Image (tube, rainbow, N blue to C red; front, side, top):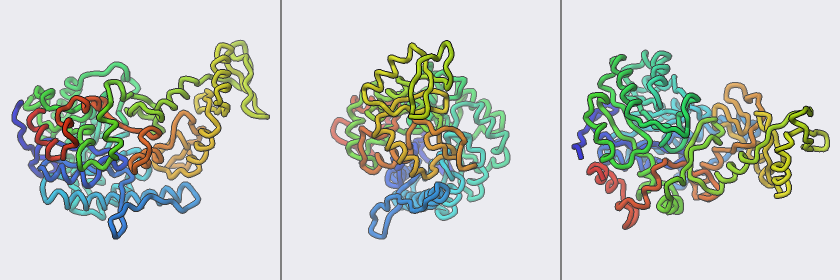
Length: 462
């Protein structure tokens, strides 16, 4: 194992080991502070982070306003309070060591207001901001205003070039580096473009070399690339360390820190991950963001997969191809292909009697209780995304103008629930594709390690 030397990250020499920020509340001030304490970089999530009362109890999110726009504003204010609270905890736990970063989802509703509000109220506590899920073109402007380093998350050199030309060339001083997140291996939302095949993964080396060449051409030779997605043991990445084609590099660990004593996720979630096998995490596109994402296959995901597999196309008027009538209500009948009639009837006979249109002129079949819950979730929408396929919320216009998509789900509800001891079966569980390695990793045979234990093993290439 090559010796791992400290490098400059966010204005300080630290070990090039970074905790990936995972929302909602899957990495917080406790975990990020512990990573910073070991002279590494800890990252808490800025997506609906917890805040507390005077006794240290979590103040659970509550929404009192009737309109979506007003609830959206409530969500922004609560997120700012949470971000400040987690920054304070991380700062205290770190004890002056390492660096503290905050991770933001650019497609989060109100992301600019939340980021600005947290940096304003938590001055001196946050050293850097990472941001992905979209093209965060205003990230450099906002971070630089507060003297905070920023790290865009991209999955290609082309994406970084777009950000540079559009905005970052004007905010060079606080560009701390670039996070390359492998879109085939990372957990949560992934940056797969329409030109890339989700079933044909590419190794990151050539893509990293291309990104480094782009950065060098722009005079960013000294800024590190942070490699994220699929990182487990540094022994597997030795060719990337001290490699002139890649230049300064740091490694971001997303999945492995989830099973530590300081990790805020539930014990049930940790126990589940210790038992997973290869293939238990799947890359799919059910997220209401429209992005691909990787999550653990459970009842929640299986229901979405069943719904998608049962989908059929339709037309409002009969023709030679669409000739089989299907009654949607007392006043509306549509027509499906005759070869889809058996598929439709089988689902209806199995109790999936609520037949709903999608924005793509297809039909999906739901149980009555699923449809009731879906309507309730849409009614309670808080505008957590800039645009939501599930509820048709749009931050810019109030609505996307498209039909709500019954193939999707309320992402805020499920992630918030599972991060507060909710069901690990009936909620979305984001995870990276290396999660199966917990089952055979010697570090986890004798119980759950501390962050310090994990980092020592990582430094040794274990």
